[in-house]
Image (cartoon, rainbow, N blue to C red; front, side):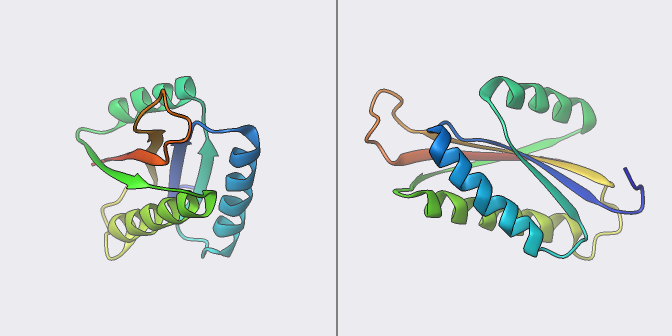
Length: 133
């Protein structure tokens, strides 16, 4: 890793069909290509277990973890994508604009899970994200 360049590592857990995940990944890759090069953003769509491992890494790297959450209805993959992009944009602004003390590598853990796991038609999601300080 280049120590002069900031990197935002983003882990996203979104339980859905492989077709939906593929579609979401396509949109996210396109989004990251359109961004400026600083900070560099690495997005991964992770399984539940992989994301749990990254949460442990995040807890080991930072003194304080800030976690936020909302409930939101997301009827289509485009709305899921829009929420993810909004959170990434707000995070990069908070971490990197006019902040000389930011680390060269930062982690954002994002989880988008159905509010009611037993109802497949449910489009209401629990969205939580965490950042280290």
